[in-house]
Amino acid sequence: MTMIKSNAEQIVTRIQQSCDKVSRDVQEVCPIIVTKNRMNEEIQEVYSLGFRHFAENRVEKLLERQKAFSQEDIVWHLIGPLQKRKVKQIVNQIQYFHAIDRLSIMEEIDKRLDSPLKCFLEVNVSGEESKHGFKTSEVFEAYEVAKQYSNIQIIGLMTMAPFEANDEAIRNYFRELKEVSKKLQSTSTLKLSMGMSQDYPIAIEEGSHFIRIGTAWFE
Ligand SMILES: *Cc1c(COP(=O)(O)O)cnc(C)c1O
Image (tube, rainbow, N blue to C red; front, side):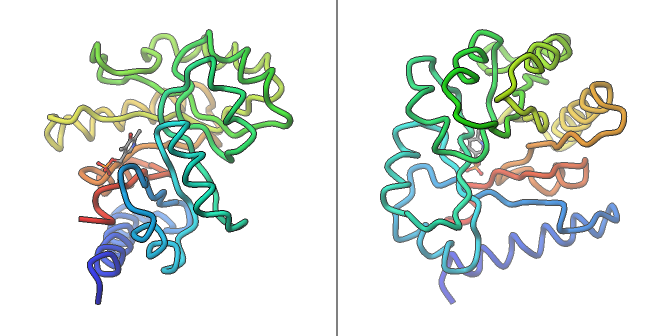
């Protein structure tokens, strides 16, 4: 068995275990394969195992990947920050954008889209200076502002836990994101995009719907 295949089996098992632990349906959790810095051959192998959600954090890279992988059943996610001048190149090429991180980008996204795009508001739950995203206190306004734009369909909130945080701190950040989403929408149809290679089991336990995993597939 190749390394990628055994990694994939391990990821699938851990997703199932995390769901079981908190009685969640595994169908609620979508693993996204973050392909940044990987070779096309590696990505092809993950594709051939049946996975269909792929992500890049940079516009140029995502467009390059789409040239290499033109299969129509691939679902493309952009998960990194977007500069205004690049919006028009990319927004009609993807199915999900995870990183609306400021009010000033919304108008341009809305204007350039031909049809509604599923988007997440990125929230800087930990409040680190170096991180993108709205502060938790700003999310409510951002959510209201986004409603004015018919092509921006906010389907949920995204966050990244600090790299150096311990498990308990990470869990608290994820929990906080969920609290914010509940306050935005008590019926809670909002999705959560949280969890990476190091912390996706915790994220699933705390209610994540989209886990963005890179390294764990390949190393
Ligand atoms: C790189 C990246 C990931 C995946 O990180 P891993 O630690 O490799 O799993 C997830 N989300 C974003 C926004 C990233 O840039």
